[in-house]
Length: 109
Image (cartoon, rainbow, N blue to C red; front, top):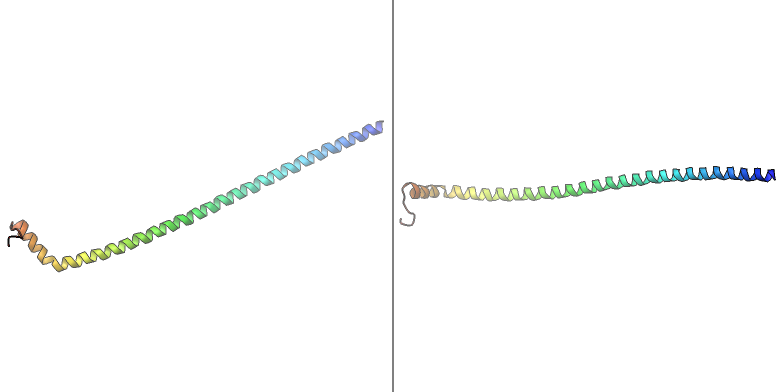
């Protein structure tokens, strides 16, 4: 009988050891899972940052290109206005002088 009790105690001790080892292994697996999940989350965040930066850069570059295009168009318009002014400068100065300095109406001449 004592032998059977000793055998049961040994089985119980082995079971406790096995349970403890299993719990430790489960905790190791949980920790490994947490680490992998954190790594995946960090990678996803980094990928999202990169994608967002690429989209931001794309939008900025498109905006810059549009602004440069408008600037070129405005420079061309300004050149045309300058050429038109230079072409009509004498007439415009005479007209302003006559109307505002001499109080002559351009329609009465």
